[in-house]
Image 1: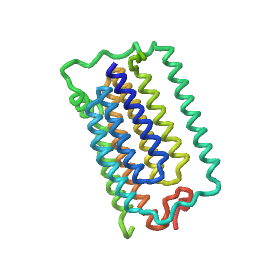
Image 2: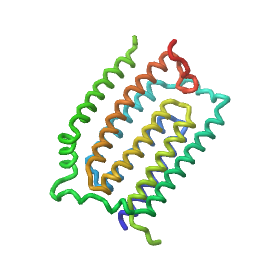
Image 3: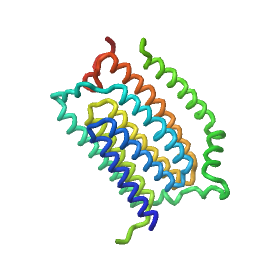
Image 4: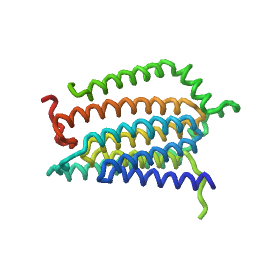
Length: 171
Length: 104
């Protein structure tokens, strides 16, 4: 019961903030709605027993990436409003149509799989108790997924160097 | 009103809705910063999906992959915003309809 209330509240907030991110005119407000959206998604992770992921979401997304967006939005203060291109409406309509088709397709898949719940029964047994979420994720990261983990760190290093070179004044 | 218990399908529907909002944002908005933010929304929808299946199947791999997605999203945001800054310095615009030259 409590889980239902929390879930529906969070879902409403996530969808609402998502719509606001897409529709708001002021870009700074967009970024702030994005932070709220990310925080609500982090709470969804807590609901899904992924506490470490929730902390990472708050630290990296809501704390790091969004601040980056905010800096760029404030660095490029637009003097002139972007002129609405004449051939813009058909593309917007196509965008809505594409999103509607995708939503219909995903809903169809969900309804279909909900009526065939056989695959859900094949769930693995729960992890041994006494091992927290962080312990489990850490063990996986440093055993099974060690190589992807190192590749991700290399990717971040390359991205850092690339961003510095791209954003340099005399580039 | 009796509330049905929350199943993984609830989370999947939420994820699908968030992903569709991201698609609308990418297709409709012309400000490139907002397009990048819509892509972040879509990545978040995918992460909710991964966390849901990780919870359902009692397998931590989903959470690990969600973390990799967050790392890649951070790299993408850094490089993408660097490109936006460099572009803005040269063309004084953020409209992606005017971003049609490979070099100048």
